[in-house]
Image (cartoon, rainbow, N blue to C red; front, side, top):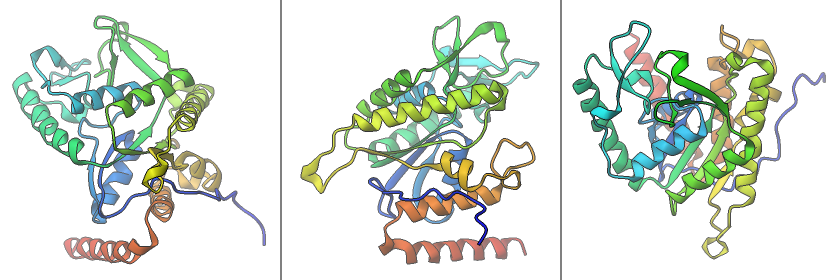
Length: 295
């Protein structure tokens, strides 16, 4: 038979997920897509409480907020540029933007309070890294999660090295003792960086994650306890789904069919066989509810 794809095989799962887990997902819009599906299928999951995050430093800053006690204040409020009069912060995606500072702070702090409770109780954190490129605000010196359409002169663009990615992940882990991580690299291509820049960025993320995992201590007294693992979503997209019919119209984002396929591969990898029947029942229940609501 003619071979039309290169399957990603021999995937050993050291950190999986279960219906018993309390899961937090942080990262790129690929996290949003997979996270919504996991929630639809009955998993106890909290997805991107600050909105979509793309680079490792922004994810670290978000976890620092979740692990701390500070609330957002007027000093964090930033008016969106390009004629948009709404307010947001450099820590949030523009989905949090509101008409006034007071409205933004009320919603942002309500989401933060809920996310802090989830962060304390969660035992699994799934992080999807989108890009090693980041923007640093010149005035504050801090890396921002979103430039909020502010003038380009307010920022300097930087690319994290693989060593900086590793160090950022190590600092993330320090804020999360006892929690287990699953890392992925988003298959979404950041072509605003150029084809070559996108590949360099993804390479830095992949090397950074691998070096972090190689340095993770394994607790052999806990059957054994692996602190972190990696799921190859990026590799599956690049190799198994190496065809433009698996991309959306922008030719950068995976199509819904590709997202569904990678989600299936992820659950095949991460979910214990003892819970497969529960998964299938939850999928049927969700699809039945969708069918009823459409009629």
